[in-house]
Image 1 (cartoon, helix red, strand yellow):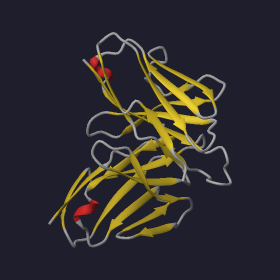
Image 2: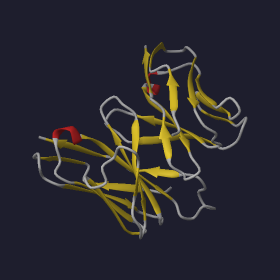
Image 3: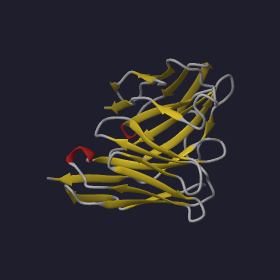
Length: 110
Length: 119
């Protein structure tokens, strides 16, 4: 069974600071996804990473993938309050079933 | 962009009753849909894979007789929670994969979720 872990589980950071969320997974996969979830809402797609070394950036968020290390990172640059949410990574198996990480609850403090 | 809807958005029912949740792909066809369950402050857990015209595939630990899945058309999958109990209260989210892989390869589109509360 594919297992996905995120670190940290909870993150409180001040506006303007940088931080990185880590996503480790247990078996080989070449597809990794990052999602954002606001309270009571469904998932908003942030990034799709499809190959080793892939790096994607959107605004203050940047995601990368290292398939050899089975590691993805989501880097937050100069955080703002609007980024407060829970962030999930998900890894797809060959059957296109998604297995989600434990989630990182981010709170950005003014 | 591809849109997936769920109905209802929320439902409150009495213990012992059955509840049906619908998942529809609005502007694309989906041979495969997925059902997830999310308890408060927890991650999404894959419950089952719904395949159009065939039986669903359930994840280990998910009771197939309790969570009935029907994928009768390329745009609709239903999840029926039979004889619901308070411990079934959760946020249920479906996703669908666009059948046209060239248009949107490897992408799942998530529905808005259905919040089930069993009293």
